[in-house]
Image 1 (tube, helix red, strand yellow):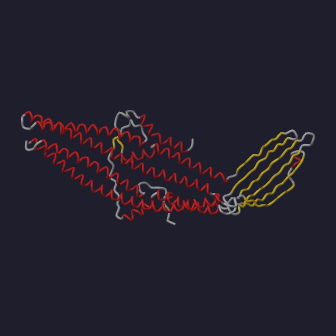
Image 2: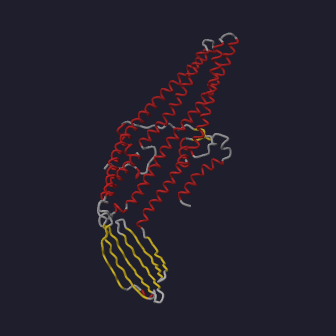
Image 3: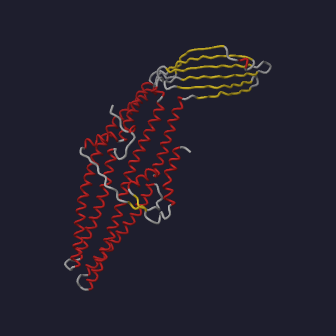
Amino acid sequence: MRAEAFLLFLLSLPAVLWCTAPGASAAEQEITLSQAIDSALKMNREIKKTLLTLESSGINIQKAGFAFMFNLTPKVSAQSGSEMDTATYGLDLTRKTVFGTEATLGAQTIETRIPGAADSHRSSISLQIEQPILRSVGKLINEEPLVQAKRSQKTARRQFEIQKTDLIVQVVSIHEELLMLQRQIEYEDRALERLTRLNRLTQVREKQGRVTRVDSLRSSLKLGNEQLQNNSTKERLQSLRADYAEMLGVPPSIEFKAIPAPLVTVDITNTEAAVALSLQNRLDYAQIQQDLEDARRGVRIARRNLLPDLKMISRYELQGNGTTTSASKPHESVWFVGLSAGSDLLLRNEQAALSEASIRNQLAELKIEEVRSAITRQVQQEILAYNRARQQITLAEKNYQVAKDRSKLARRLFEMRKGDSFTVTDAEDELAQAEVQLLSAQAETSTAAYKLKRVLGSLIEYPQDLKPGKEK
C-alpha cells in the first residue's frame, strides 16, 4: 500500500468511528471550532481529492526524470524469405544528459542463412555519441519538461494550501451561524414563555373587561407568529447541521452542537504594513510570480529555437564476420564523425512560437500588477469590514440590553395595570430584533477576523518554498 493511500485510510478512521458510535444520530454531539477545523482538514472529501491530485503531480515529476536515466532497449527481429532467412538480436544501452548529450552503447548479431551456402554471422559492438551544438544544447531546453512538472506540482501544492485556508473560513462561518441559530432558538423559547404568559393574562383581563378584544387578538397573533418563527429557525438549524456534517466529512445523520470559541482578534495599525505582509505571504501572488518566470523562460526557449538544429555525431564500432557466432567475434574497428541538421530553414513555426511567448510574457506582467492591486484592495476592504464588525458588536450589545430592560419594564407595567398589551408586544418585537442583531454581530465579528487573516496570508503557516519571492 502506498504511503498516500495509507494516509487517506488513517484520515477516514474518525469518520468510521463517528458512523459506528452508539447513539451517534440520536443525540447532539458537542464540537468546538478547533475540532471542527481539524476534522474538515482531515476528512473533507474535496481535500482528499486534492491529495490524490498531488500524488499524481509527483508521478509526473518521476516520468519527466526518466528521460535522464539509463534505458535498455532489446533489438530482436526475424525475417524469412524464399532466398534467405535473417535473424537479428542485440541490446542498446542509452542515456541522455541534461546538456543534451546522448550516448548509446550497443551490441548485436545478425545471422543470415542462404540455402546452399554457408551461414553468415556478423557481430558488432558500437558506441555512439550525439551532441547538440546550437538549438538543443544546455539545461534550458533539455530540462524544460522536468521543470514544468516541478512547477505544476508547486502550483498544485499552492492550490491545496489555498483550499485549506478557504475551508477553514467556511468552517468558521458555518460554525458561527450554527452557534447563532442555537442561541436564537434559546432566545425564541424564552420569548415564547413570556408571550404565553402575556397571552393568558390578556385573555383573563379581557374576560374581566379590563382590556379590549383587539388587545387579546394582538397578543394571540404575536404568540402565533413567534411559534412560526421558532419552527422556521429549528428547520434552518437542522438543515445547517447537515451541511456542517458534510463539510466535516461525516454522515449527515450526526447532529453537532457548536461550542462557542474564543473571539479572535487581529491587531492592524497600518494599512500599508498589512498590504506588505499580504504580499509576502499570499500564495496567489506567489503563483502569478511563478507564471511570470515561466513566461520569461518561455521567451528564452522560443529564441533558442530560432537557432539551427545542428548535432555532431561520433561513432566507434568493432565488427566481426564469420560462419558461426564464435567466429564472428568483433575485432575490426570503424569510426566516423559527422554533422546533421534537422530544422526548417524558413522557421515559420518558430517565429510564431516566439511571438506567442512574447505575448504571454506581456500578459503575465500585466497580470502581476492586477493581482497586486487586487490584494491591496482586498486588504483594505477586509480591514474596514473587521473594524466595522467590532464596532457593531459593541452597539448591538448595548441595544440588546436596552431592549431587554424595556421589555421587562413593559411587562411589569402591564401586570401592574399601568400599561397596555400594545406596549408589551412592541417591546417584544424590538427585543427579538435586538437579539438577532446581537447574534449576527457576534458571528460576523468572528468570521471577519478569519477573513482578514486569510487575505493577509497569516491564517495558517504556509511552506516557505511556496511563498512569494523577492521582486526581480
